[in-house]
Image 1 (cartoon, rainbow, N blue to C red):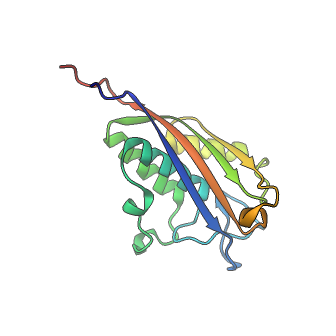
Image 2: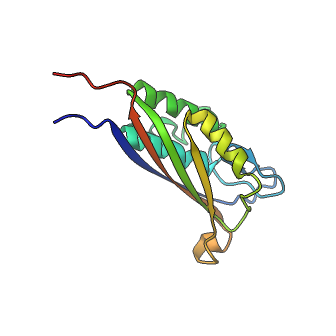
Image 3: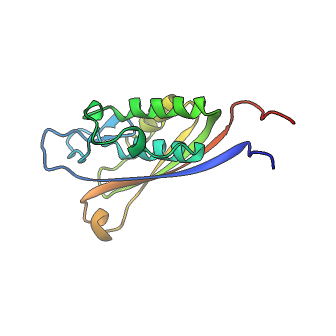
Length: 167
């Protein structure tokens, strides 16, 4: 049976808002000034994390916790775009190239429309392929609807970086 030349991965990440007034909110590599930050070991960029999870999953390379554990002090406060860049390198070393990534960010706040283009550009530059970001409101439902945090889902398509060997 021939190995597939394309694969799809799904990523998900969720973080609650932090009570620390010094914590920055970073989504898709963009800082949202005046908004509370998210709780996390790194900068807690839920969008970059979901993209990274989707790429790792598509390539069959495990998950963020395996490669960047929150028990490792090297990743404390880490820039999630740097983590994403490392994930893209790992995907490449495994013989895959990102084709595109599509994200849905679920939150009551902040409003993403004013920063969407910037987020998409930053993520696309790191991934080396188009990344789209859409905002979704939870319409008051559950913890996300009460504004307690932010969740993001992402779907990534990857393609073989070279043709598989023939028999």
